[in-house]
Image (cartoon, rainbow, N blue to C red; front, side, top):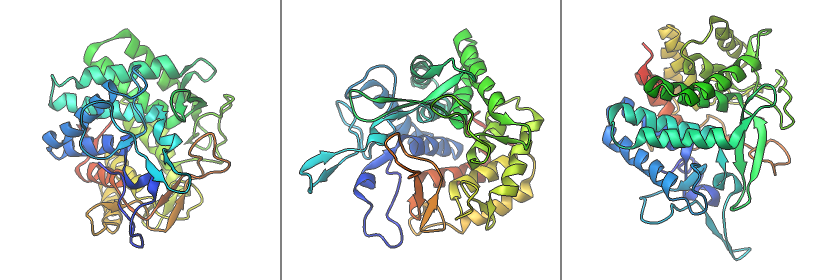
Length: 363
């Protein structure tokens, strides 16, 4: 399913987004459909993820790409997004979309595990296990703090390994590995879950009570001056035995990231991040603060586009302070005021109270 639709002042999307179905957005959408009882529609996405796993055009090692071409899945290798560049007279693709971010693989696995819980026997658990195997085999990094690196970036067949480690990615990996361990009791899944959990403990700064973004490519901890909202939220709902002290991270987010009845992506407070505000609504519902969740949901409802999707933000361009890939000379990952599948899916999860990391209601 396409991740974006044209914004209020756009006739069409930019070429790199026209046909793009981002794996993360579709994984969250599948989980949201399950939360709404739409299992058949969720299985269409899950089956597409299994097809992507089995029929990559270049690799057969258990990875999936960051994005695929939107539309029905046919025979043969799954198509990646792209566009005809008339100026250069060639077919163009995007280095990030062709790459494989570790967290996106983990989210695809979470979608498959949510599906396995409601449609066992569909091959979803085996697919999730294979995805986790790629993560463990290709991104494990023993440098302290031990954890899992960012994945690979660039074009086939020689992609660049991303040597930084992300707090968000390691949380995703922990959730997948812990879920599989609960189901099957495997020692390898237990080891992966413990490694990723150890990384979370290492990047949590007790003073002032905040999760760092992760590490730099050379293995050093990221400074606490640069943070992101989802990094403060997901450990609280993604780790079943999360320590109470981690809840200070949400308090930190409320003090430093709150804006206009919701939250920004980062501390520059330049706009409302709708997806992150939905994540915050789900988190406070999990923490038993239902009145706050309702207020955040009211903010989200105000960002409904005519298409029925939620806008990604309430401003023309929302900054994140993050670079898309290793070739980026500066932070160039932005959200724009466009209807966004990922924001919409998180809005649904928040409204129904569904925890995507466990496949359970939070209340």
